[in-house]
Length: 130
Image 1 (cartoon, rainbow, N blue to C red):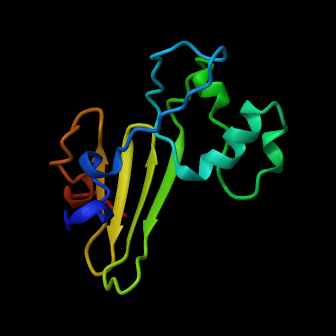
Image 2: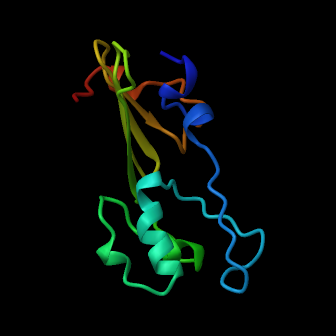
């Protein structure tokens, strides 16, 4: 399950997004919340001073996060359905929790605050229901 970028474990899915906007944000600042490529259209519109609400898609502008506002419960989704792939993958992350599913395998749930290495699958703990 951990082959290539289609596995949504943090070491392969957490890819930096670099934004350069001179005069708008402090150089070297970091946003700890997860973001998605779906957020880019609304973010570009927001940086241009336009209403990011007109962007097509399910993303949201990251401008508030880059301004320093925090959203610890931010939710992002990811899917992998590449051509010829027999095992599709999906992931949803909300705050500290991440749920991953691969076609044909049981879902996996991780608490990234207590298990950043994603070793303890909470979905397999007795009594957990998904």
